[in-house]
Length: 273
Ligand SMILES: C[S@@+](CC[C@H](N)C(=O)[O-])C[C@H]1O[C@@H](n2cnc3c(N)ncnc32)[C@H](O)[C@@H]1O
Image: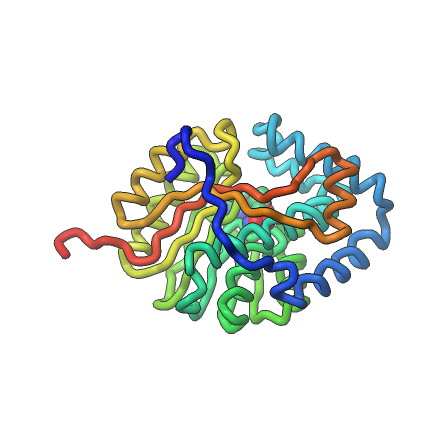
């Protein structure tokens, strides 16, 4: 766990962009889908607005304003979703989370489906994915993502703070979701996730490293460690595919590495054992 003094860990993981040929095909399909009606400068402007909302305008994120225009939705789908895919694929590999492929993956706050898809592909493509998101636009997008990547999955509209009953062999991922919830909503998700972990469900949470975004991190990380899980901060070298590089540069974002922090419970410690 990063204490604030040590730098994030840089593990040796292979590059998911070259490991999964489906990834490049998905990027081309995304480009065709979202640049049919929008021009690159429009998406770049929306990407700047989206990025500043994530960093500075937390009220806009909480209201769901990050997906309130066609430009922002395209910017999310074309830029952030592939970045989240690459980051999740690296993390899953570094944690060994795909060594025993889960039978099913529940992706809560799935957006366009990137995180669940990355875990499923890293696990060999067999896990069936269910995505849940409150925003109606994401449902079609995530289902389309699963199909493009050759995965079995479907998404539905729903509230991530109310977890469905989980069948045995299900793993849950919550990528960049918890910081968008109210304190009450997050507490509900944490309680449900930790209860599921105690019953044998694997749980993976990803969040941005910026401290201001998740002031609750240390407390939640301590609960995860008490359950036998781990909390990590990561840094992965990345060479962005051309389309992502173009948007990254145009929006002044400078991603020459991917950073993320994660909570992972693989096998919970059960009281009394
Ligand atoms: C930053 S996006 C991350 C999307 C995706 N997990 C990824 O990694 O690309 C956060 C997502 O959480 C969704 N979300 C926020 N609050 C939610 C809630 N209470 N229930 C379901 N989804 C929610 C938003 O609609 C958005 O799609």
